[in-house]
Amino acid sequence: MNIGIVGLGLIGGSLGLDLRAAGYQVLGIARREQTCVDAIARGVVDDASVDLALLAAADVVFVCTPISAIAPTVQQLIPHLSANAIITDVGSVKKPVVEALEPIWTNFVGGHPMAGTAESGLEAAQTQLFAGKAYVLTPVKTTPPAAVNIVEEIARSLKAKIYQCRPEDHDRAVAWISHLPVMVSAGLINACINETDPAVLELAQQLASSGFRDTSRVGGGNPELGVMMARYNRGELLRSLQQYRTGLDQIISQIEREDWNALQGKLSINQQTRPKFLNLE
Ligand code: NAP
View (cartoon, rainbow, N blue to C red):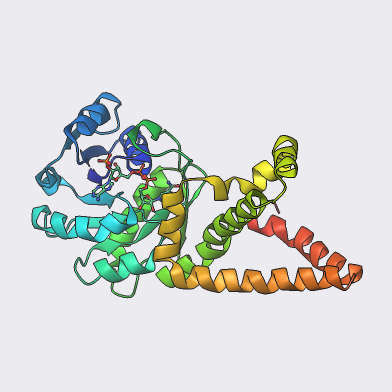
C-alpha cells in the first residue's frame, strides 16, 4: 500500500518513520526541496517532492500540516488523487476540519494521533511516537466504513490505541484534558510574572521547583499551539474555561469563609478521581 504524507514536520515525519518500518511505501510532500532531501536521507519517506502530483500513486494520504492549512491543502490535492484514494488528517481539533472536508471528499476520515513533543519540524521526528498513545478517528454518518477500517489498520500498525467518536465529542473532550490545561497553566505563569515586588519575584524564580515545573509546562510551550487551540476549538474551550472559573470562585469562597471541610471535600474528590484521567486504575 502506498501512503502519502503532506507536511513532513514532527507528526508527518514521525508517521513516515514508523509506517516505513511497518512495511508501507511512503511518499512525502514538503514545501521546500531541502526538506524533501532531508526526509529521504533520514529514512522518513521512500520518495518526496514539492509537487503534489507525486501522490497520484497514493492509496491513503495523511495531511499533517498546521490546522489552518489542512482544508486548503486538500483542495489543492484533490486534482492529483486517484478517485478512490482515502484522505485522513492529524489535526488536533476535529469539528471544523471534518465539516470542511466531508462534503468535498467522500473517502475522508478525520483523525487525531494524541502524541507529540514540545519540538516541531522534521528534525523533531522520532520513531515510536504513537506507540501506546490514543489515536482518535472521528467518522461521521457519511464516512464509508471501508475507509475507516483502512485508516484504523494503519493506525494500529503504529501500536496506537484506537478510539472512535463524533468530531464534536472529540473537541469537547480535548478541551477538558488538553486545551483547558494549557490556558490554566498559561494563567498561572502570567499571575506569577505579575508579582509587583521585584525582590519577591526573583525569590520565587529561585525557589521554583518540581511543582511549578509540572504545572507551568503546558502553558509555557509553543504560543502558536495555544492560539490554534483557542481559534479552532473556541466554543468548547470557552465552555471549559467558564466551568473552571466557577470552580475557582467556589475555592476562593471556601477559603474566604474558612470552610475547611468543604475545601477538604473538594480536594478529596479530586484525589480519588484524578487517576481515572491518567489510566492509573
Ligand atoms: P510541525 O512540526 O510544525 O509540522 C508541520 C508541517 O507542515 C511542516 O512540515 C511544514 O512545512 C508544513 N506546513 C506548515 N505550514 C504549511 C502550509 N501553509 N501549507 C503546507 N504545509 C505547511 O507541526 P506538527 O506538530 O507536526 O503538527 C502538524 C499537525 O499535527 C497539526 O495539524 C497539529 O494540530 C497536529 N498534531 C500536533 C501534535 C503535537 O503535539 N505537535 C499532536 C497531534 C496532532 P515546512 O517545513 O515547509 O514549514
